[in-house]
Image (cartoon, rainbow, N blue to C red; front, top):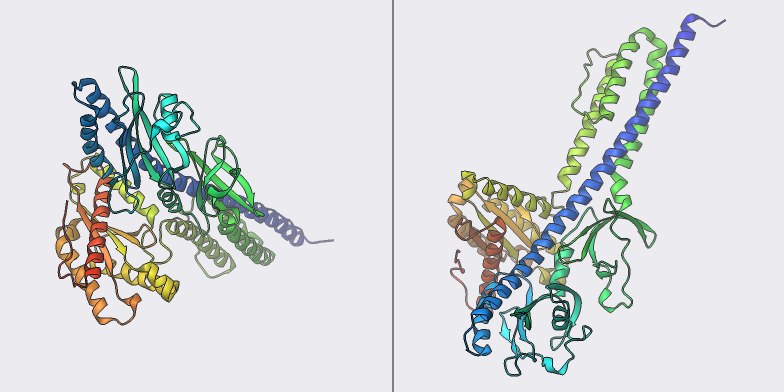
Length: 551
């Protein structure tokens, strides 16, 4: 007959096995739920950030067209008996000033219906070379049926529908360039006069979408309301007929699961202001990779802990009851999401060792979750903040401006662009291009050491100057130029010779409606600085003082 100790030990071991199994299972379920929830939240945040970025851009285009439209209709209503040609000249000036503040514009136009006038045709300005808008010969609208929406869509669709509209990608005649456009019809006393519109280069749209990245191989693409793909970074949909279909329409949660070449993908879909749908997608395997690893580790650790517990139970049946209860309670807390737990582990016996191991497991899990969050906002190449972190910082700064905090009134934004990166990549290899980017980033961080630095594109960086760096911004900018020049004089290899264009804009409550306006001005100044450098290099002169205008 078995002894009471044997029976008690067997009972306790059985209970222990059941308790550890339940705790481990609950822990695995909790980690899986946390991993899935965090990954979906990251996907949603990235999609929302991309949606806000694209919508902000589209809205800026719409506002430019609507402002001109309002001015035009007002001018037409109050226009005396002067000619339409005089009216068009007035509109040109307004349109030109607005488009200069709207990035990515390829063309803008104001076309008069031939039924209104056979002499005043309107105007069309084009910036095909990216060196400024030039007036272009207009298309002869009288050669087309303006009631047929399959012809001259930028004119006929607004005329027939009678409302402002975004048009899907099409080939603009004369230039043979794929564009998207926003157009609005113009009326005077309910009489159709013509159309005002802006065309955006399809390549600009592609750049905006390509900047949205997630995990290692996640990307974004665009579909229309009928689920036709209109832009995809991995396929040239412009040459494909019929257009390929997206993974699915918007569901109630906005999340779609689908397969591409046998790879399961998860996408987050959000509608854009212009009728398109933004899709941000990432392989499911990358989403699950983190918590799968932790589940395996927890399973191995659980088996090890179970073995230790069995040995301890056989030797110290009575002493293990209380610690086992405490460990069970901790497991339930962790399962509930409480990682701020530490269990006392006095002594050096098996129970204390087990307790310390459990504490370490919780600490590692907490560290992993923290590292995962940090990884989402860190640039893998340079280790500085990435574009997602930049958008969050701008949002925080905008909130401070909205709340009229005194500390937010004094800041400046500096935009940097690493010249010659493509040449280094093509001639020396991408590893040397990476060295060039790291060296440029290191110099920016060293000069502006008290300011956050962000990598917002392949060769673009941004820093936001506040407090001491803001007070010494002019000296720091000069120091940066000097140190760049020193690398070009001292170093032999091209990837060690830093040539970085920069533009700095200081926030002004009189000029800037939002923080985005400061970023835009800094970006414009950077391109001016970049062109100045190119002109100096082309003329064979050495620029002793780079273009340093502020506004």
